[in-house]
Every structure is written in C-alpha cells, then in structure tokens.
Amino acid sequence: MKKTLVAVAAMAAIAGAHAEATISGTLAFGMDQVTNTTSGAAVTTKYLGDQRANSVLKVDANEDLGSGLKADIHIEVLPSLGYNQNITSYQSFVGLGGDFGRVQGGAFISSAFAVAATYDATGAWGLNPAVQPSSNAGLFVGNQVKYSLPKFAQGLSASATKVLAETTGNRAGEQTSYSVGYAASGFTGDYAYTTITPTGLGASTKISNMGLGYDFGAAKLVALVVTQKNGSNAVNNGSSYGVIVPVGAISLKAQYGTTNGYQSSSTSTTTAVKQTGTDYAVSYAFSKRTSLNAVMSTRSGYNGSTAVNGDSVKQNQVFVMHSF
Image 1: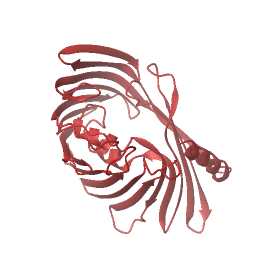
Image 2 (image 1 turned 90 degrees about the vertical axis):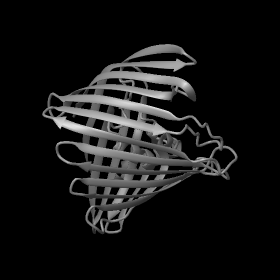
Image 3 (image 1 turned 30 degrees about the horizontal axis):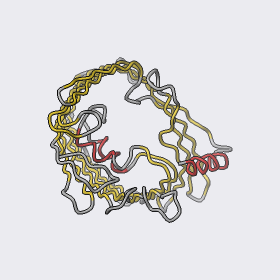
Image 4 (image 1 turned 60 degrees about the vertical axis):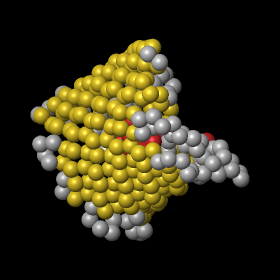
C-alpha cells in the first residue's frame, strides 16, 4: 500500500504540474443503530456521525498529452465525521488512455465489490448477505494495475485487473480479475471473475459476480448472483433481488438476499450457515445535491462478525447526504 501511494504521489507531481484540478465529494451525517444478537443476548450500539463511511472528498485532474493520449489522476480521502476522526484513503490512481484503451495504476474498488455494490438495491447501505463474499476481494485495494479495452462496440466494456503482492517470494494477497459489462436502453449487465491467492496454505479462492438490471421507468429491478469457492470445498452461493421505485422526489427501495454461509479468503474451511437478509430504504431529495435517507435492515444467521445459526443483526440508519 505504501509503495502504491508513493507511486501515485510521484505521478501526480509530474503529470499534474500543469493540469487543472476539480474538487468534488459527498458529506453524510446522521444516526446509525446496530443490534447484534449472539446466543440470544442482544447488544445495541448507537453511532452519531458517518458510521457507514459515505463521506468522501475527491480530487480529479486530467491533461491532453497530444497524439490521442490523455493522462488523468484521481484521489479520494474519507473525512469520516463523528464516528471516526481518522482520515483514510479510498481510491487513488493515475491513468493513461488512448486508442489502445486505458491503463490505470494505484488503489481502487475491487472488480468483485464493484459489481456487488452496483446491483445492490440500496447501494450496499444495508446488510445484504449476498454482498459478503465479494468483500473478501476487498473494497478498496491497493497495488492494482488495470487495463480497459477501447470501446469497440456500443454499450460493451471489458477490463482485466492484477493486484500485486508486496512480499518478495510470497504471492499471498495477489488477485487477478476479469470483467465485462453491457448496457443498452434500460438494460445493464456486468460480470466479474476474481482469483485470490490466500495468505495461508491452501488453494486459491475464486469469486464470480453477475449483476443484471432493467429500468422500466416506473421501477428498476436489480439482481445479483455471487459464487465463491475456496479450494475444493463446497461452493458458497449468494443471490439478491431488489426493486427501486421513484415517486416524485421520493425513492423507495426494497431487497431480499440470501447466502449459504460466510467463507474467508484466507482459509479453505467452510461455515455452512444459511443467511437471509432484508433491506428497506427510502430517500427524499431536497434538491439534486441533498437528500434525507432512512434504511432498515435485518440479517439472520450472522451476529456482526461470525456466521452462526440463530444469531442476527438489525440496523437502522437515518442520515443526510450532500454532494458538491
């Protein structure tokens, strides 16, 4: 991670010397209440601020290098409000694009989680268990190199990503991902296949994500199917189905998700626990930039850290988001 940030800073100093920078972002603040039930004992915790880490500050710069080449820089930091006073990094990368496609290097959202969050009806605000296997690939991962093919067909995109290990002679933490997407009229579809080298002994973890969506205008339907396999162990299947209904300034969202267990990317063991979850969300847009949001989520077979039959998590969120 340190190597990646040094490389990003160096490239930014060179490529961004004469480039114009754009600052944008999102600020979120509200109340988050979580109740974890373990072996029948419930513990409720309340957070004031931005516990879900929705706030982000973005800096973008790009420059036309001539001969069809364009360089760009993107930096994100998380100014978490109230709950966590530490400033941490999100996505930070440099890119070079042209007729050959686009090459990026740095830290950005993993291909697996990108598909999962896109086809989660709440945008991954809730407790959808089908998103869990994708998080094993990481949310924002450093040391990545990504190549995106040029637009050779209308609505079609494809890319390949490699996450490099930092320790000499140790490939633990390496990832290889391949992604393809298609969009036409109201239809969208994305697929990502990821292989992760474990930190311990054992075979690699393989995660496949497929998301489908269709916008009818009066409502948008989304579906997510995730398969994770650790070595030769049983496959962990997850799926979720959601609907988003806009009603004037209000947006209503509902979702149901399920998975047959939680598996860690660093081990070959399987926890065969079925988990189910429901998410209900409503957003009211005061303007194009500011909204009031409420999310109610439940998840059974999970206590906030471990998959256990009979345990559960409930979460209620109310927060204001403002984009600039």
